[in-house]
Image 1: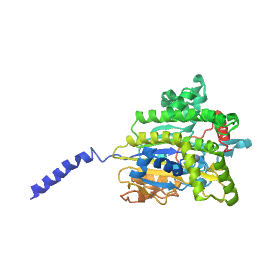
Image 2 (image 1 turned 180 degrees about the horizontal axis):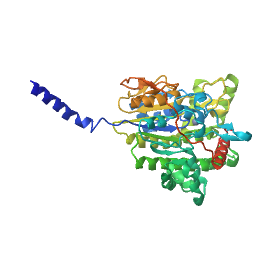
Image 3 (image 1 turned 120 degrees about the horizontal axis):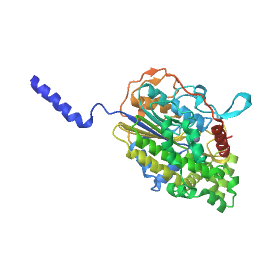
Length: 434
Ligand SMILES: [Zn+2]
């Protein structure tokens, strides 16, 4: 009888082998950030048969209209996403702050007071690749590779000056490898990304591109975005990380100006109604969203390809989290994310795929505060005691025991480079943020 039991146990182990190669599989989490992405534009495009990967995400994962916060400043919200804490606690409360002598400088990673998710994971010996996260210069010294958002400014520099930005990457030895990604000319980039020439379009509409916000610097924005995408690819292929986070600014940049290409009578009707009634009739709102979605199709198709790339890279231990910091709503000045007090912050997107994630499940309550706790929950690690969000446990078929721990931001570098700060100020002006 005992022999039989032993045999059964052995058989059990043998049988279960193919399901757990070696020790229990190592959980991996991939986070893809699409600044300003909004379901209101994605949904009509899926309905028309576009965006197969977003469709896959919606049908095979858990998803939510992600509650955002005010002020809807990307720098503030992406830091809330990475820390799970309010801006009062994490310290990045605006685009700029007044340094000594009354000089205004952009916030950077020196001013963040609490640990980001990758610093917490580092305490557990997990390796991370973090690429282009908002307000991430100077880079955090973590196990893995950290490419701060400041690196993208390299696309404006002459070849012999680029070395000045080598400390935008940790470890610095990877910097030269990433320079391969500095993209070629504008037309070639448009073609590779499948993006229309908005500068030429503006001209066709009788506008002077040089005088239009964002479009005036469109070439600069698209070069940076293409560069970041390539850096993501290089970093992905050179390592096997426990945590991989890559941020794209693209949807936000284009949605800021795309409204100018709406049929003029439709846009006017929307503006009039908004000014008169402080709201839009649902049918008009739907029409505006659908027309805008059509205009944004090239942008979302590009994102869809990126999404598809990462979905295909998932193994049975991988979780993929796709999210935005806020969406866009039609307000008194057209589509924007900075809206008057009487309008709520427009919701962003959230999609989660992975083992044990509910399929096609809409999460009713999820906010930008919940992302960092949810990532810790996925790994089965203690949540940060100071975090203001909660794990989105309802998205999963399993439930984990929750414990808490106090985490600190231990050592970090405080540094501002005048040249980087000036370029950031220029960008913020171009976007109309300052
Ligand atoms: Zn944003």
